[in-house]
Image 1 (spheres, helix red, strand yellow):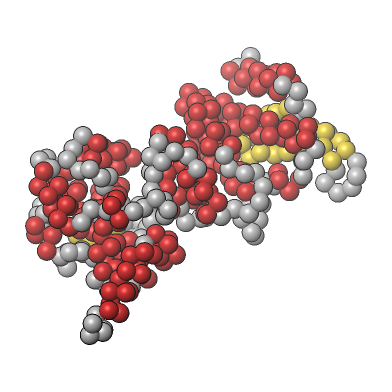
Image 2 (cartoon, one colour):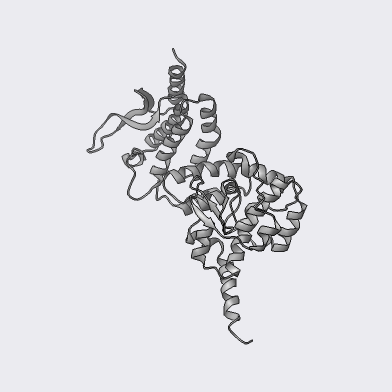
Length: 354
């Protein structure tokens, strides 16, 4: 008996022991659920299969077990409906949470494939607990997913880990994940306060305290161009000292203006000192050196907020500022609404002789 067959038997044994009236079946290269279910059309009941779209691997088996338990609970509670078990290929015209969970299974299987070591552990420790926090029925929206992430303790390892899973799945569903990625690190529209954003003098003072040239350059790039930390490695200068962010980043291609221009020379940014570390490790490594163990009292992402405020106070329209920063106008205005209001009042006041 091979390892997969033995594992399948163990999973089905656990389902029987728990009283779930369903089992997992291996059909070709895919896994299915088998149970006595209502007819799709009519009033009768018979044994039927639900295709999961999950590869018949040890990693896929972990995802299938979770779905089998969901099905077993629905049968026990008499809440089963066929609409909740649509195939991932049958994406609804209106995104719903059933589609979100189906997409989660597909993405997990594609990502971990036949990696039983990392696959099963990731499902047990991260993916399943994260998905259990997301409702299984109703309309899917960025706002709902953000509320799920923000319900976890701010800046906790739990929030970062589960938030990453949720934002990954949301992206695969075609949603704009900018606010979700920010929320998982501890930032939210409700929690962002003026005291969290450094002023220009603070930024200059902290830059002086960073000793290692590589990390001084990274700090300067985030400050002058408002880049997300992971975008720094992809940044390329234009002859006009703008910065191009390539298509390989999560947010796609864009051109970014410096603000303020004078800091390019002050921070000697054209003397490029890119760190030599893996892209997936870059943000954590940079924040560890500059913020956690370094002189900065705030994370690198706060420099992005400071850049946004500088644009607003300079009179740059929110539609253009959002384009420069690589997120939607709706996200930009929601996050920076109080500063937008302050900038508008300041401009109005300048028109009066008070």
